[in-house]
Length: 76
Image (cartoon, rainbow, N blue to C red; front, side, top):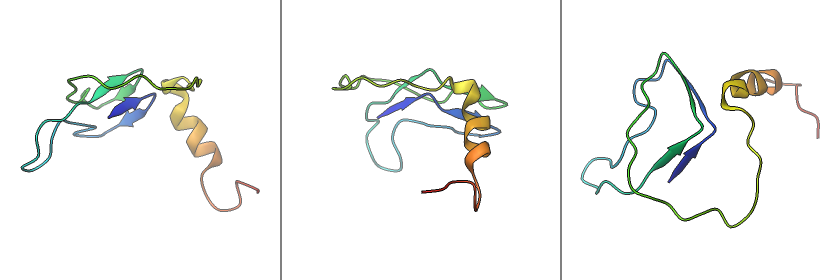
């Protein structure tokens, strides 16, 4: 799993390897922003993304999402 460019605020466990009886898996975390939250548990590797993309700056994600969240904010 790739956890990239996210904003975590007041989250006790933003991400971790494995769940229940499952094995640990692979989790790469990069370019995330943490406010009053731990960094989480990562390990292993993931395949490269086969296309180009541009991330918003992680520290801006909260304001970007809240600016467009809620009824009547997005028009199609």
